[in-house]
Structures are given as C-alpha cells and as structure tokens.
Length: 123
Image (cartoon, rainbow, N blue to C red; front, side):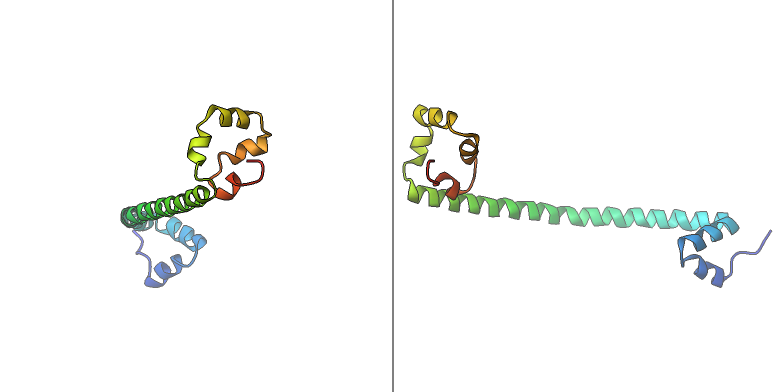
C-alpha cells in the first residue's frame, strides 16, 4: 500500500486541470472522495443560489410589469389628449374597414403601443 499524497502534492493538484488529472491518476480513491465532497457542496451552493435568486427574478419581472404599465398609461394619456374620441373611433366598422385597405406599414402602426404611431398623418 502506497503512502497518501503529501501536502505539497495536494496543493499542486489544485493549480490546474492537468495537475488535477495527474493527481487523480496517482490517487484515484482520494481524488474520487474529494470530487464527491466538492460535487455535494457545489449542489448545495447551487440550490441556495437558485433559492435566493428566485425572489429577485420575480421582483425584477414585477418591476418591469409596473414600468410597462406606467409607460402604456402615459402613451394612452397622450393619445387621449390628441384624440379624445379614439376609443370610440377604433371600435367602429368604418375604422376597421379603413385599416383593412391601408398599406401594411399603416396596419402595423395600429398594433403599436407608441402614441406617436397612432397620431401620424394618415392614421
């Protein structure tokens, strides 16, 4: 039975992938035990990270939704200032028929969230 690795060999093994590969070949049982412990700890850290990250991601999504809602309200306010009757107009058959015969670029403007698109000349 050979002696285990020296502290210097263990330290050297951590310097590069190639050093670890050589250490693993020389001391497969010890390397396997180290790797098992490292993988277990890595799994714990990843789990904790995901657990801590989830609320932050949800908070970011919520904040983005709030900002988007504010932006849309602002755009509708601008549109309402320029065309107070826009809600009534866009729900008429005449408007729908008018949009249907317009060039594709004009039709695409009707799906825009930008008030400036709805107030362009010809819209």
